[in-house]
Length: 289
Image (cartoon, rainbow, N blue to C red; front, top):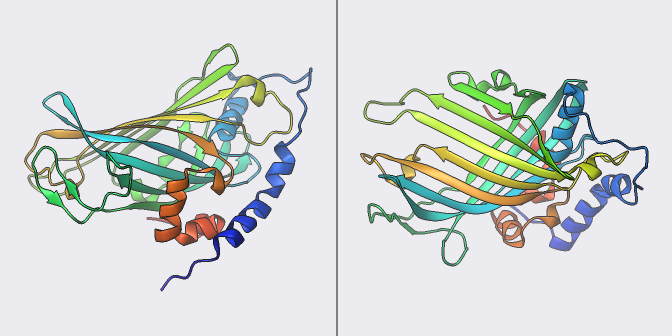
């Protein structure tokens, strides 16, 4: 049986653990001599990516989104259920052109009407009732991050897949900067009659150049837009139907667990208390794959 720590004790511990980052980021004045990163320089670009996706000082960061998944059937987008997810990150600089990124993800499917955890679902295409709704917990994984993208050849679980990740060139307008990452994964059909595995994801991060120009900041406030186009998971009961699964979501990057959505914290405290009690231990636990 899992035991949970008192909520106030956990939050106090998290606040104490975040103290170093708070001291680093609070009250740093904007220097007149500070300059925005040179996004044409690979080192500056990679550092910018790390500040927007996580933190360059080894602190834990989280990127959360809330959104929906749709079935794409005959060119129509049919809403299926909601999505509430967060990925936890820790970046360690290896050299000027490489960070090591540790990460894991915990995600939930939610009811389109109530927004609550999906526990019984009627497939809107087939009418089939699904009672065994999975939760998603993936990782931890360790991936080298370079200016061009993730080095997925270093991930054991990707060994037999055609897997590619890249960062698109930064787009700037006024004080805004956007960086989009793309991941494409393809695998052979696991069995006769089963569609081949396909996964396509595009995530865009938006921050302020003025924040990136402030000296001493290891991380900057960042918003997130997420889109995906993937094959249908077996639990959805879509065998024999020509369909794909489209996802979209929006959210933010956070540096404190308590700044994530309240319902996400409620679900995770119930089902994955170790994630909230000691995310650093989870990140450094047994590696997935």
